[in-house]
Amino acid sequence: MRLCNILRDRNLLEDARDITVEEQVAILLLTIGHNERNRAVQNTFQHSGQTISKYVSLVLRAICILGKDYVRRPNDEMMPAHIRHSKRFFPYFENCLGAIDGTHIPAWVPASDQARFRNRKGFVSQNVMAVVGLDTRFHYVLAGWEGSATDSRVLYNALDHETDPFVVPEGKFYLADGGYPNIVGLLTPYRGHRYHMSEFNTRGARSPRTEEELFNHRHSSLRNTVERTFGMLKGRFPILKMQVQYPFQKQAQIVLATCVLHNFIIEHNPNAEQFDDEDAPSTDNFVLSEPEIASQTHQRGSNNALRAAISSQMFTDYQLNRQRR
View 1 (cartoon, rainbow, N blue to C red):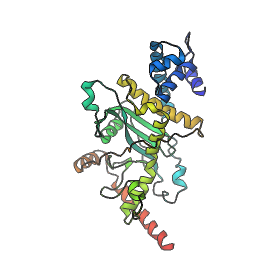
View 2 (tube, rainbow, N blue to C red):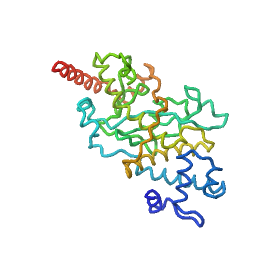
View 3 (cartoon, one colour):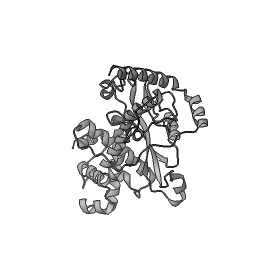
View 4 (cartoon, one colour):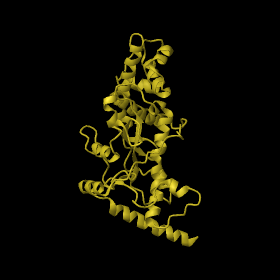
């Protein structure tokens, strides 16, 4: 009801002669929250298929517009409590705002476009780039790229976007995996060393022995928030797990709208049940080649010096703490 009031007060939706704003929003929520088809929604609300389709589109558009207020960076001066209260992460990651990653959402496209949208795992998808805070809120979302696009390509499109660019404040950074370059504004793990949590947490796995491994371990532990957020999002909105036969532009809008609603829920009802999707596939992408890294760091500047300083201080403190035990 709060969402309906906000949409009505901002003139994003209005009551029609035979259908209120509340019913319009309920139609969309049933569609994306339960992945209901048009015919099932017709039976529930006793409206024609044309009416259902009309209001799904109208409410999607309204919620995407509302996203300007709900999908955004928080106060950049506020250090996340998850870092501030942890000796493992503070002060090394004190300027970290969150994590960035891509996830593949199943897509429905004409046969003539399927080659472009087929990803490395063999299914047709759109590649969605998401920037997530450590409180599991979305800071930025870019949807609509074909599944064959690399994460780094989507990132550069976001950085250079004409109308809604992804901006990282000076002196701050987001954590990213090996599918991204270690450029200014991002901090990636060391290549050639263990950096997945599974490599450290499996039974019999040895503790980090070098500063690179220690950095990668803590980096991966902190960056895991983005994968948990994707799991929560897909658990709340099962439509993101399936191919839906909508025009592709509407499929991209659905992704954006679900991210807006996810943030809306956290802001207005932080104690709401969290839907973790335990079966969600890993979002890890392939590692960039050396020529790609050289080219991209030349354009945007390298963050290698910052990473080296953090890992060196972290490993020194780690060794001192072990000696005191």
